Image 1 (cartoon, one colour):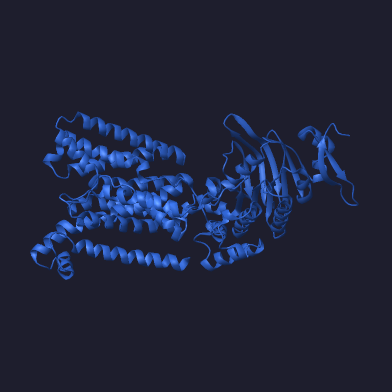
Image 2 (image 1 turned 135 degrees about the vertical axis):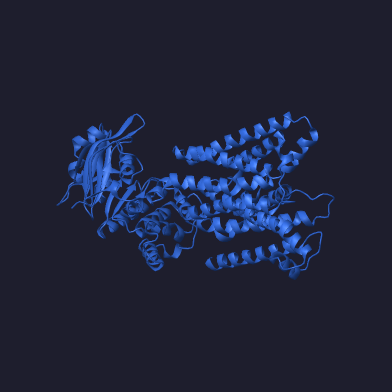
Length: 331
Length: 258
C-alpha cells in the first residue's frame, strides 16, 4: 500500500512534468523543447519569448492551479460532508463568481477594460466566500453550510439568468454564455496573477485541514473527542474550497467534473484517508485539467472547444465506468 | 486523588434538563457502570464529561485539574470516548482506524512510539491478523474490538464507553466487557453505560443509577440494585443468586411474576 502510494506520487509528478513540457512545446507555432525553455527563460529569440511568456506559460499556470484547486476542494468537501457527491460547486462560490463576471459584462465595463471581467468574478467569489464564512462563524453544522452554499449558488445562478435575459443584444448574451463554459484560451500572465495566488492559498488551507479530516471517519463526536476543533475545521475547509475554486471561475469560467472525478479515481489506489487523498487529488486535478486543456488545443476544429465542455464530456463517462467497476466505492 | 470528579453537574438539551446537580468520583483502575431507564441521562452524562454537551452548572475535574482549563489536545489525550453504535463512514483498514487513536499525540510522540502503541493495541485485542482488512467488512463483535483497540492505542487515563455491548451476540458481549476490565486492571478509569443490569452488576465495581437526570444512588451493585430500587427506578424485579461472598444478579423479571 505505502509503496503504491509513493509510486503514485512520483508517477503523478512525472506525468505533470511531461504534460507541462508538452503544453509549453505544442501550439499553432511549432517550437522545439530547447527553444521553448530558452524562450521561457527569456534568453531565446523574440518570437519564442513572446509566445512562451505571453501565451503558453499563463495557460500552463492557470491549468495547474485551477486543476489543483478543484481536485483538493473536491476531496476535502467529500470528507467534510461524508458525501461522495460533494463537488466544489456545492459551496456556491463558482456561481457567485460567475454572477460577478456576468454583471460586469452586462454593465459594459468589460469592453473598456480587459481585466474587468475577471475582477468582477473575483469580487463575486470573495463575496460568496465571506457569506459562507459568516455562517460558519455562527456555528452552522457542515450540512447547513452546504445547504447555504446550494442556496447561494441557486440565487447567484438565477441572478445570472435574470441579467442575461435583460441583455438586449443577443450576441452579447451568447458571448457571456460562451465565456461561462470555461476556457483557458487567450489568458495573460495578469489573469494568472489574479487567480493563481488565491487558488494556491486555498489549496494550502485544504492541505492543512486534511489530517484533521481523517478523524471524521468515525463521525463528528469521536472526531471532537480526538481533539479535532470542528468549527475551525469547517471554516478551514469551506474557506479553502471557496478560495481554491472561485478565483479560477473568475478568470477561466466554469470547469466541471474535475473536483468530483479526481478523488473518486484515486480512492481505489490510495485509500480513503483525506490526509493522503487531498494532496494527491491536488496533483491529480492539476494533471487532468492540463491534459484536458491540451486536448482542447490539439483537437483539429474550426474553433477551439471549451475546456469545461471537454472535462464534463470525458469526466462523466469515466465516473460511470469507475462506479460500474468498483462496487464498494466506499462512502 | 480521584481520577475524575464531577461536582453538581447540570446540563440541558433544548428546554429539557438532562442532568441535574450530579456529583461523582471515579478512581484509576475502577469500572463505574451507569445504568438507568431510557432518557435517564446516561449518554448525556458521558457527552457532558467528554465536552460534547455544554454544561449549565458544575465542574468536571480530571486528576484534580478542571477539565475546562486543559487545551483541546490535552483533553483528548486524557479522555477516550466511544459513543453508542460508532460509525465507520468511509472504508478504513483496521490498522488505519486504530491509528486514529494516536491523533491526540500528534506532534508529541515519535512515529516509532505511535507504531508501537498501535501494534500493542492490535495485539491486545487479537487483531494483528486483521490489520490490513477493511474494518467495515468485519462482524459487529470484531468491529467493537477494533473501536476498543483505538481507545487502547490512545493511552487515555479515562475511558467513556457508551453501550459497547448493544447489538452484540452474548459471547461478544462478555469478550468486550472482559476487555474493558483488562484496561481498568492496567490502570484506566472506565465509565461505562450499560442497559443490561446483570452484566452491569457482574462487570462493574460500582453502579451509578440515574433517573430523570438525577443520581439515585452510586454504590456497589448489590446495594445499588436493591429490590426497592429496581422496582422504583426500572419497574422490574431482580433474580438473585445467594453466594458465599456477594449476592449475584442473574437476571430480571416483571414485578407481577412471583
